[in-house]
Length: 561
Image 1 (cartoon, one colour):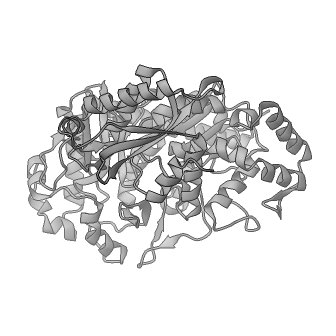
Image 2 (tube, helix red, strand yellow):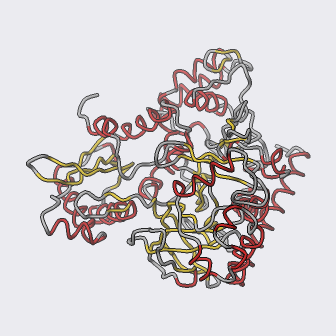
């Protein structure tokens, strides 16, 4: 099929911009230390006359050491009073140029964060990294961009009306903001954001997140998809479950020319019959059956996803490549892949000043920090960054692992949130659990579809960690009792080998050996769907290494239906 000339011109521009930004970030690695110092100098110069800059003496700060001494490390809760003043409309609180929008992100207390986003931040820190993140699409998977209907972007969820702060500025997820309208970057539309199902018509629109997901999936089954974008891998993992769960609903809508029973487009009875035949032949309906030309998935590839992505990828097709999404948060970028590395990216050295604290140390306002040149390969660190968008010595809450170096600059992968589970001095982090699971699974030759855990205090019977594991069973045969026993022993040993605190708690008798609950993969998919149904945006519903919700845990391990 010939590519539309208008799309061809746009793709050529997009390829030029994304590859140019990627190449510029590569070049910056050769003078990374200077870029880091310049990033700090820009913050001090531009924001010296702000309320925050005045209180912390920006005008008199000349180097990194003085900056560390003047500004404590803060997380969102500690910085929130300043952010709230800016959101309420007070000028020049954190930044010289006032925020244009406040990105929405889930907070630890359950409230949505308000991340101030300025034009200066977008121009200097965000857009170079953002465009570079898509360079592999343009360079290595050009067919993904040749039509507007080749990509299902699961995180793109435009809404008719954006929420607003008290001062009237938009408060929305980054994927809900039109970068062209807000910042004049019309090329910044992600792959899949121009698809026919991207902006749902008013006749189909619903406030319900799951129903919107259904509507887009119903429309996408009529297209020849080449790519699925999730960023959050839990969204990608939910897609096979949704296809199977919603198949009768999809078939009826296709047959009737409706979306969720509402008239839309033309009936497609041939496609409805084809999907029914495929499901009957295979016994289920997988993405690979619906879209046989799929070639690309774009999402995070580390953390719990590293355990289940190999088998999940197969359900999308054996020829599908999984590219790693950047190490980033709504608050700012950390690292982006400048080649086709499967998990890691190079620090975005012009975007922010990066500081690090060893992950096993408690992160405090006065923690001693390391700079990028001080990091050790194989070690894990808390990330603290400073950029012109007003976040100074900001503890983003992520832990990264240094994989290697490129041009002397650390290349890092996401290792988990800095959440601790600590009921008996074990001080388990997410990455401890994931690494221990990987070691135990490798030792026993077993695979999982997903996993979660929690400490269980048993009055009069001791405390232990219990794991819910969804087993992957080749050929349909489940794990035998002997295999479960071997995995239990291997996991307990691996936790002791990975986490010094866990080893000490076991040796002192404060923790008993782990217990495993082998559950069906549908338990995790149902939990994901349930959280979205409660009103959480799908992009924010992520895998849970530590399951802290009592009701979710009980449903997960229940032996009933």
